[in-house]
Image (tube, rainbow, N blue to C red; front, side, top):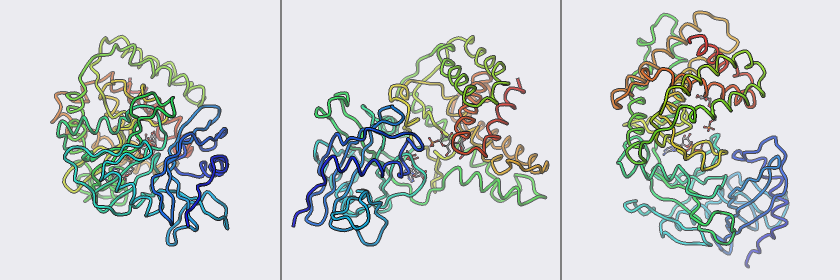
Length: 459
Ligand SMILES: Nc1ncnc2c1ncn2[C@@H]1O[C@H](COP(=O)(O)OP(=O)(O)O)[C@@H](O)[C@H]1O
Ligand SMILES: O=P(O)(O)O[C@H]1O[C@H](CO)[C@@H](O[C@H]2O[C@H](CO)[C@@H](O)[C@H](O)[C@H]2O)[C@H](O)[C@H]1O
């Protein structure tokens, strides 16, 4: 017996309740309206299950967003796993998350292996990529803005949830880095794209929907490693940082070298130009104004912060090239043999055109320096222990130095020599973090607020 797909209007109604519950939904807590299914494509038409690919348009607080949502429709939920149903209990047929159906994920991999064109979706492998053996995919359960499936032990496919017209920078920059044989990223294996005349407003060219890349089994997250090192230092009251078994300095130095390698290769692959200092700080000034408006406690720092940005504005042209753009320790992985940098998508909610503007590598360096400060300080919010505070600063300064030394071994510039520029980017990131934390983790606000104060008092 064949299964009938649920109609568009019913789907839109089900999605209105279901989307806000999804981890990757970017409009949490905001008003959701106007949910419409604007595109449907059949990915698997099996007697036991239908798997469809949907593009869903909606408004979040009055602003348009487009998501891709694979769904499965079947007589019943797949037995042994949580399927995240859209339909209420007892409904028949059931509609549920298509990425949680093994038959659905296997069909996705089969399309990729065959470089198929299905319902207008083009599945592509890079020239020398191994053709994957069909198998089902396991969905990663971390806090992600996208959804990643792992197949076997060496392939990962990430679906970009928010769909914007054009090539996603994650695929674009992984491809550029692959051309340079950059060792500090996972190998790009393929992608899925849509060249869509039907929807009309996708822009005409290819729009990236997903990226396939090498899965680094057994890799450790940079943030997890750094925070484990800090915890161990705090537990060993009598030892210096270099005497603790999990001292991070050698790793920080290797990470610095890896980030510098990524920058060298991005510069070579995408070209170096210059931007005037005034242009470069325009977004920093705007962010400062918006941050002060949202978090009034920042007002007392505003004049001093403006002076930091003015210094860069008056400094003439600054070399720029494509960079990562959203780098922090959570975007780094320590594979058994090397560090790699992941997730070159940039800030998913920013327009693609903005994310593709060349910028100074100092922005990425500042991202890691801020992250090292976070790793050292975030457990000490509200803790008065002066000894621990001293040790946290010591850990941070030691690892900032190690990271910069490692960076300077590969690059022809040492981040510590880029004074005013690095200071401006670090301040800009700390201001962004004050707003981010006040919205998401108010208890953590003192971490970036302390950094704003420190950066400005060091002037
Ligand atoms: N190539 C990879 N190999 C192994 N794990 C990876 C790889 N890329 C990403 N990951 C894991 O998946 C998580 C999410 O990846 P990421 O690219 O940051 O997704 P998102 O864009 O959703 O934030 C990472 O935190 C990391 O743990
Ligand atoms: O989701 P993204 O990876 O794009 O980044 C957002 O969330 C990050 C938190 O996960 C946030 O990072 C801040 O906290 C980190 C520790 O949890 C710390 O390592 C970073 O240095 C700090 O900026 C990031 O700012 C935000 O954009």
